[in-house]
Length: 215
Image 1 (cartoon, rainbow, N blue to C red):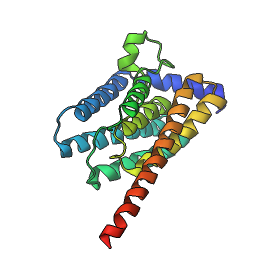
Image 2: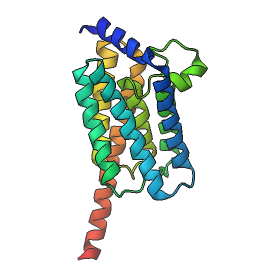
Image 3: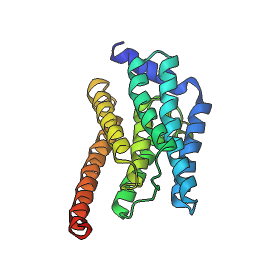
Image 4: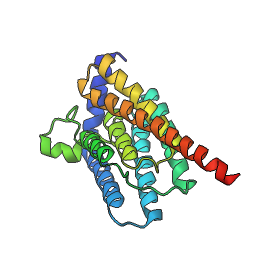
């Protein structure tokens, strides 16, 4: 399919079932509530990874049903990474200690949940029916935002692979499809990438600092 055909496909998909869009929003808001409230650690982690898995699987299933193998493969990989964390990981999901990262992450989560493209509704309704969990870019905005909100407790590999997909889809959205709103996804992915490498450096520094003590 050429660019106009794919954009028409995305618009069709985004408007196919607004009830699905609404249910995906409810899941994200539930995740935010779990992160900010005093939910038990294990339950918080289950909700976080469960919702990420659901969002990625939803995009994957829609791609399979409506015949988009590229979306099916890329989001299938993301869904698999989240499912592994859901059933295997014992990491505790905690909100970031940085107020700056917190503010940035919440802004981009809001952009993903609002995402004023493809669905023709007013600005208020878009906060509950934008195509999160249905098409790639708003889903990646929301999920990378959620992962950034919980850095450094989020799994490093899961974070990295989602960032890479964010860069890929951001570049395609802006430079191929001319959906300039996807600049937000590209900016978020690059920012998240910088936080990822910063977190790696901090982990390495702590390891080097502790290694003489362990010896």
